[in-house]
Length: 577
Image (cartoon, rainbow, N blue to C red):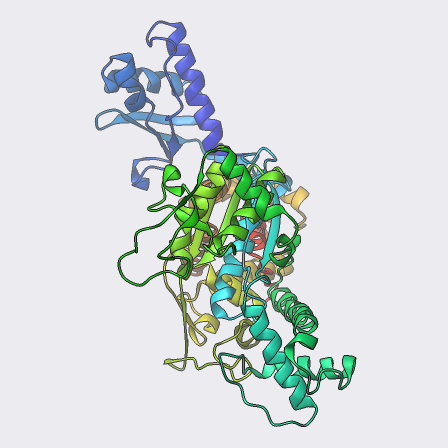
């Protein structure tokens, strides 16, 4: 049940009636017609822009259209008031029975709020994709939580979602990892070692070096790189990926696929992708002008093989092959996304850190070119996270050597708090993560406030002396819970299906967190009003029918809270300690 969609359907039906009567000309484009909450709740429950949208193509005064539409809408039992406002907006008030229907739907429909928006289209969400050189840090944590919640949201909205991690194991950084593990391996053999030349000094490599010793003994001791580099690189990469999988699991994240960059080299897939672009006339030999400011790593003052990315909105054409024949960093990324297109995905989403902002246009250009603009790519950038504890910036992790790890955060506050708080800001806005505030039990802490609402409802259900199963509650006489404060809660419940679609269309899971806070706030407000007005208390002594009606309302709140928390990957609290 989606009340906003239902009323929009009613608006369309009334417009059909007006067309049939000759009041409106036929064949008008109605795609921009919306039914939404009015900006000011005092104006009604819903508003439609139908008259404003149709006035110009119909060559009519918008107020005249709105007045005719209002007459037709008022004939429906769901509409108690339909009145014209301003130049032609139409505000509507709905009957209390509509909101009772919302409560019953939440109690009886396991899919309440779910959408068919995605029409089972195949959607790939690639996220995290950190270099396999160490444990995930707090920056990765935000991208991991955002990507996972977005994937869950899209699944909830009817998409066939695949979660994927791209393993950056084809670059020079994995050679540095191998050398770092080799030093820990020598250390395990009792040798003194020094971490120089950019090697990774974190303690997390100590057990990896020890495990390597257990596996190969002293076979690599005193040997040159040519004897051990490749084997140690593969061993170390797999060890780091095991660590990363464990880190992700601590946040409740499970990937469908792990895709290796290294697997692209020597497979012919990079060559196939570049050849495909070449066949489209998008590859040429040329020399780029030096960019202003700092020179990027892929710029050379000599002729290279270039991709005409400017034909698809990029600022400059991009090198894919260096003058010496080696592939640039961009080439395997093109091949990887070509593979995504070839796998038949209808749409792609990449979740990158803020430091990858310069990659957005070129990657979008590549996917547009490879798919003939049939497969959209949305790249979401996650901004930095600033950590605080006791009012001070949180210091680096000794285990990691240079940064605060994902595990540091989860160990401090838990997965649920980490996930919810990471979604309390839009992905491209900076986020402060204060360990004290995110565990504070107050209204100012959205994690606590939402969880407390769910737990509080549980406490009411435990104390109730009437049947509280959903089937029984759905049959309650909800006219006994029709105070304006109670109707406000029901109206917020009605916005859930609409909110899901808005969030899914915009790829904005933070909207779910915001909505849950608003719903929890409405519930807590109703609870507090019951302290002063006994008629609003959920348990009405000696009045079974009224008690069941009021419990039906708050149990519906609990159902929606649990659904929303499920999208965010947060376990609803059964009780607060």
